[in-house]
Image 1: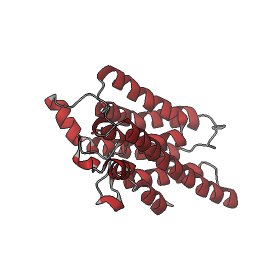
Image 2: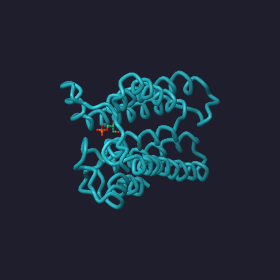
Image 3: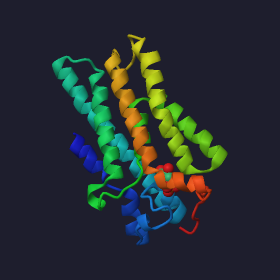
Image 4: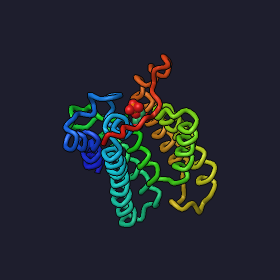
Length: 223
Ligand code: G3P
């Protein structure tokens, strides 16, 4: 399941769409990032929308596969349904790793923001609501996508802990099934590692933010 999700995540749609339709390698343009933001900035709206949809979809599909497979095992073995959530995390993380280090594209992919967002949305909409709110607030105030992404990433472990511990763990009727302390710690730790990874992937952006050279989002209207 993890291998399938990794291979799915490795399909870097920004590289595929911009190569096919614009005959360019997005990794040698703009910020050099293989992601929807850079496509929007360097290529155009159409390619960016397609990249956005497909990069989001691969994260969502991976999580659904993980949830379904682990959910099936839970039903067969009588295990707690919360175990299915672990399946979702494993598949989601594998997909994000594939997006950042794609096996088909010399292991040079994106920063994992959108694919992680899809993973979070499919795993827990409450955490997603917090993370996306942080992103939107930062973006509306700064217009810098990288800063918004990093702030949203930083809020991911905090939101995961607050929701799983203070709401789910103390509520025996949680929709995902009875939540254990192990689940709280494991999922918060995964979220923390993902946040660090995403921020680390933005190291060039951090340098530019420090130098005052990080660009606000502009849209290439040519195509
Ligand atoms: O999702 C990536 C975004 O946070 C930054 O993209 O192209 O500005 O490096 P970019």
